[in-house]
Image (cartoon, rainbow, N blue to C red; front, side, top):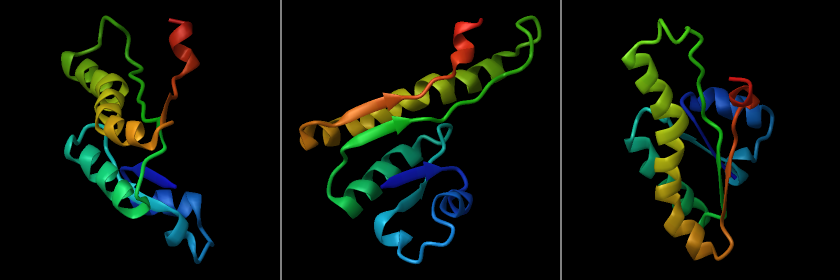
Length: 117
């Protein structure tokens, strides 16, 4: 399994805090939806380590709690970059490897809050 996060140490501690062989089964890699270079680095590291990519779960997301009348362009851009463009870019980078696997899948995790707006 390969998992990406901005804080790799916290991710590793959360996923395998006591497993001495976790590094053999688990690749924890830096990924930040706002840092475009981390897309390719994570995909490349995963394929390099495991030889293939069978699935991708897009789970990064943020929320902006200000009202529409106070929302700034910068805050909106950040929201869109993390919640929309990040998953799109990561999926684009993963697609060749998912296709090569023959049955690769993409799962997009979304908040149910979007239904209440």
